[in-house]
Length: 203
Image 1 (cartoon, rainbow, N blue to C red):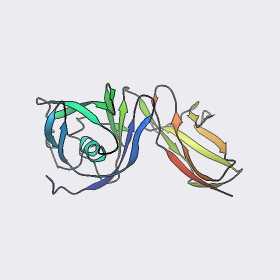
Image 2 (image 1 turned 90 degrees about the horizontal axis):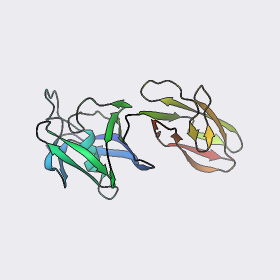
Image 3 (image 1 turned 135 degrees about the vertical axis):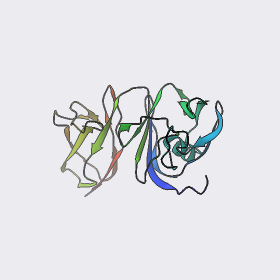
Image 4 (image 1 turned 90 degrees about the vertical axis):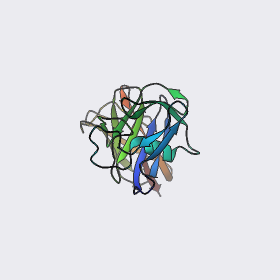
């Protein structure tokens, strides 16, 4: 299994009150070990009708975990997959999304592709928010950012973006008074926090 090709994916873990991890991960299907479940394959082979083997959301957790966060879960032989029920000490129902869509099989069975966006979210089930906007702007100039429902693609109003609220078109205007790299995140009750959006502000 070690010869399965690696792929670059984005992994984001949204805990109950904060983002636990967000970044690019080089990952492939592999054996995954948890304290509760032991060692088992997470390369898509547990799927009832595996069409191909490769990287999976659970394998990505294992590749990103060292030095960043802990995770644990039981293994269910009847489903041939782990049920991840704890990440960085946060116990509960962890849901998995790929490209903002909830997966329909286990985290060790869903085979991902290069550049896929993998999201592990505590509790739910809620739809994830997506925050978009420019990557550069100038000091004291208005900048428009947009927030949408990652599943339906519809704009979402009354979303908090670093202290400012979106309108019913999902747009929020922010003026930065200092230069440098700024990081923004969208938040609203009954939604999963958005991706981090970075913007460089210059004079």
